[in-house]
Image 1 (cartoon, rainbow, N blue to C red):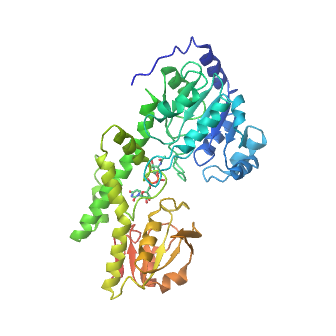
Image 2 (image 1 turned 120 degrees about the horizontal axis):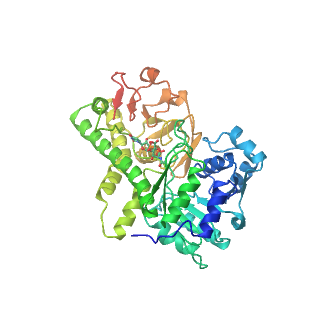
Image 3 (image 1 turned 90 degrees about the vertical axis):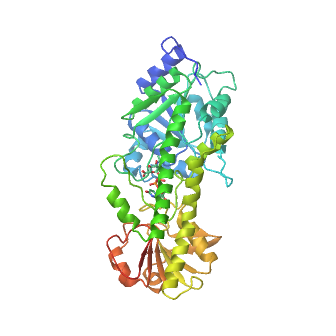
Length: 443
Ligand code: SAJ
């Protein structure tokens, strides 16, 4: 769809806003102070802008205003001076929008149980912004969503009072690419894609991001920018699905899939290693591709790769539980009545996030088949499965277990000693790489 063009230099509204952005006098707003919004707010405050964070969670607002960070990628010692100097503050009150020049919307975009997009966070944020919206603003949606959201959902809400995107205000989409805990790539140095509703919008978005971030990548439209993120994460999800299916094939043929991948990864071009695992966790990879397939389905296009990969990845917990059952059978034991100690429940190593973690599905399935469960995870003190709370155990439970199941390969574990301590180990992450023993079973 071609977007209407606006003549940037001859538009006084654009000129005035661009001067405020370049002069760092623009008042920056960030809606949603999570692992995306808070680091962004801090970057702009550190650049010298006055930044107001808006979040419905009063606890987060109070912690920001106390200079106490709750996001791992934002050290308190970095944030506190910005709060103290008055450059950064937070509020639950959207009326501050009256005094803002720019707003980045960084709210969640989960899936409903029906795997349909839950757009309520974006809609609620836009409805609140619209109450105090004024000419001359730049609004950038960063929440991962289906192509068309910015143009079809956000723009009508903001244009409701007669203001026109591309003329009276500027509207962009820019995918968030935050990778929590990534020491090498943080908000400032991750290339920032931005696409606008009009060329003037794109230019305003480019100008805004170039003030605080190292590398800005302007693209032709909001739809292109929305699709970029979905391609990135769909690529990942489908390749993980492929390698999980390869693991199932290798299992059936008695081939060590980990050795296959390690050797394939020696190819210096045309190959990128992905690794099989117990399933697909997190709030991005299992979710984002279904925003794309939901949208394409509206256009009568079946996203078959996404559906198939979703099925394969979703089936891995069942495959793992079957593996545990068969391994116990080899030792003359039934799964029913056996004690299984799960090692690691976070959705990936060295983090504390259990959202969509396959460990929860695996524990649910094991309980349903009559096993007794304990778990340990240095980052997760307790979990709830099927309404029951499980508290993290430790060495005692590991030693008493009939089978230890490695689900999340946190670096904190002493894997070398595991085979001598445990009666049986099922390893879904190749954490015991290089170790051989009759009581080790690998994915
Ligand atoms: N996983 C596998 N095999 C793999 C890689 C991952 O089974 O080869 C599993 C993980 O165990 C986890 C899930 O997939 O359960 C997702 O893991 P992830 O490494 O993709 O980590 P996420 O969910 O934190 O993804 C984020 C994404 N970042 C953004 O969306 C901005 C993703 O685009 C990044 O590529 C990824 O971090 C990263 O590379 O760390």
